[in-house]
Image (cartoon, rainbow, N blue to C red; front, side, top):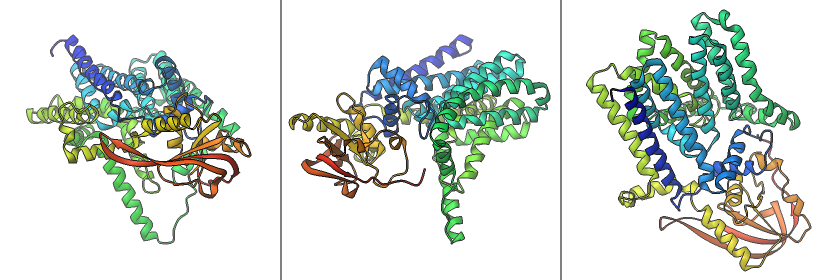
Length: 504
C-alpha cells in the first residue's frame, strides 16, 4: 500500500465489505427493528417541525428512505449504513488532509473498529446523522481556519445546522471552535467568520424553537430533566455521594467499551503524546473529545448518562491514534493490527448469520439471545395479531400498549402500518402524549387490541364493555423460548383514566 490509489482502494474494499455484512444482518429473520428505531420511523408517519425529545431530521430521513425502499428493515437501516460509511470517509479524508493517505486509511479502520461506530452505523438513531454532521463540521472548520477561505466557514455552518436538526448536542460545536480560536490566539482575526458560521449554524435551531414555542417548550423541560434538574434529593448525603460515584464509574466503564478495550493501550499512548508534544493539529482533534467527555462525566455525578451521549465526537480520536502509531515500534504496530482486527471481527461474528455454527454453542447462543432480546419477537407477534383480527372478522379496531416501544413496533410490523396508541400506565411523557389518543374511542363500538410484554390487563387505566378474546403468545429466538406477550381483544371503551406523568 505505497501508492495513493492503493490506500483509497483498500479503504473502499474494507468499508464495502462491512457494508455487505450489515446488509446480511438485515435479512436475519429473528432480528427486528430496535424499539427506538421503530419509534423514529413512526415519527416519519407524523411529520412535524420537531418532536418531544428530539429534532426532526431522523423522521425526514426515514420518510425519504422508506418512501424509496418501502416500509421494511432495509428502508430504515439504509440510513445508518450510508451515514456510517460517510463518517468513515470523512475520517479518511480528514486524516489524509492532516497527515497523509496512510494515516487517513488507518484512522478509518480504527474508527470502524470502535464499538460506538458499529452502533451508529447499524441501528438508525439520532446519533447516526449527528456523528456524520459533527465529523463533517469539524473537518470543514479546520480547513476554514487553515486555508483562511470564507466558503469553508459557510460549509461548516450548514453541516452544523443539519447536525442541530439531528440532535441538540451539536450545539457544542460553537464552544469547541471558540475555545480553539482563543487557544490559537486567532479569535480577533476570525470573529467575523465565527459570527458567519454561528449565524448559519443556528438556522438548525429554527424548527426546534418554532415547535417548542407552540408546545410550552416541552423539549427544554425534557432536556433539563435528563440533566438532573427538578429531581428530588434525599436526606442521606452519604448515599447520594455513593450513588454519584457509581454513576460516574458506570459512565467511565461505558466509554471504555465504546472505544474498544483492545485499542485502549493505543488510545492512552496517543493522548499522552498530544499533551507531551503540544501538536496543534492533535490538540484540535482532542479538544472536542475532551469537551464532551468531561462535560458528560461531570453530569454523571448528578444523573445517569447513557453510554452513547458523548461518542459523536470520538471520530477525531481515531485520527490521533493513527497519526501517533505510524511512528511507533513494531510492537505497537502489531497491537494496532491485532486490536483493529479483533475489534472488527467480533461485531462481524455477532451480526452475521451463524454460517459456522459457532454461535450455536449454548453459552454463546444464550448471550446473543439476551443481547438481541429488545430486537426480537415483534414481527411474529404482529403477525399473530393480524391473524387473530382476521379470524375474528374485526374491522373497526385500534392497537395499543402501555409503552411507546411496543406501540411503535406494532405500527411498523402490522399489516397496513396503522397508527397505534399508548395507554400510559406509569411512564414519563413521550411523543404519544402529544398525538390524538385513545380518548377518541370512548363510548364507541371499536375493538381495542392490547399487546404487552409486561401486563396481563389494562387495569383501572382503561375499562371496556367486554373481553372478546385473550391469549399468551410465546416468542422464540433461534428455536428457544425468549418471552411471552399478552394479547387481548376488548370491545367498547367505556372509561379512560391514563396515568398523568409529571416527569419529562
